[in-house]
Amino acid sequence: MVKGRGSYNEQLEKKTDLFWQQYSNGQDDKTYLEVYIEELLPSELEHIRSSYGGQRSEQGLVENLVLMVGHTVEPLLIAMCYWQPKTVAFVVNKEYGSDKGKYRFQMLTKLVEKIYKKFDYRPEIKDYQRSLENDDPPGVFDYLQRDFGNCSGLTIDITGGKKSMVAGAFLFAAYSDTQISYIDFDKYSTRYHRPYGYLCKPTLFKNPYQVFALRDWTEIKELCQKHSFSAALKLLQGIQKIMQEESYFREEDKKSSEKLKKLLELYKAWDNADYPEAKKLYQQLEMPVAEDLPTIIHKFSGNWPVEDQKLLLSKRAKEIKK
Image (cartoon, rainbow, N blue to C red; front, top):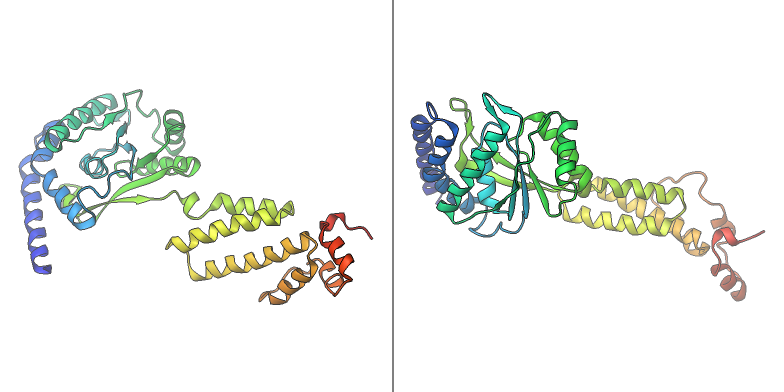
C-alpha cells in the first residue's frame, strides 16, 4: 500500500513538473490558470480528498470564504474547491505588477465560471467594491472591518496574502471571532516558485481568542475584583471544558486551572457566609494562598447553635455586622 502511494505521488510530481514546464512561461495568468483548472486541478483535488477527507466530508465547515489574493492563485482555487463555500469574496491589492487589482478580480471571477463547468460547483461571488488602499496590517484590518464586520459564518483564508496582509487578517479574526483557513504544503518548487498542489493540505484554524479563551481570562479577573466569585467560577468551568477538547494546552496549564477552581470555590463559599465549607476547602488547598485570605473563615468555622447557623448562612458576608 505504501509503495503504491509513493508511486502515485511520483506520477503526480512528474505530471506537475511537466505542466509547469509547458505552461508557466510565456503564458498570461488567465490562460495559464484556465489550463491548470482543466488539466491539473482535478488530480490535485482527488489526491487531497483521498488523503485528508472524503469527497463531501468538508462541505458545510466554511459558509462564507474571504480569500486574500496574492500573486500565486492556485492554492486559492484549491481552497475554494475543497471547502465549497456558498459565497466567496476576493480581497485584492491595488496592483499586481502591471495589472490593476480590479483586473485581478475580474480574472478570478471568470475562473470561477471555468470551475463551474469542470466541477459543477459555483459559489456566489461578492461584487467588487474596491481594492486595498494599504496592505499593511492596519489597512487590511480596516478594509475587512468595513466590508465584513457584520458578516456571520465568515472564514478568512490567508494563504495568498503577503505577510503584512496576513497580520491584518489575523488582527481582524481575533477581534471578530472569525475562523481562519490556510493551505499548508509539504513540497515547494524553487524553480517555478509554487507549491506542489497535490501535497497541499487545506486547514482550519480556530480563532486564537476562542481557543485560548483570552477574553474569558480577562473577564474572570474583573469578576474576582468585583467579588463575583460564583460568576468567575462558572466562566472558568467553561474554559476547562475547552482545555479538555483542545490539544494546545499543556498538563501544567490544566493543573493550574484546577488550583484556581478550588480557590474560587473557597471564595464562593466565604462570600455566601458558608464558613465551615470555606475552611474545609481552605484546608484542602495544595498551594500557598494570599496572606489576606479572609480570617473570618477561621473565626466563624466552628459549630454554632442551629438557629444561629441558619441565620448566618442566610446572609452574605457583607451583610454580617459585629
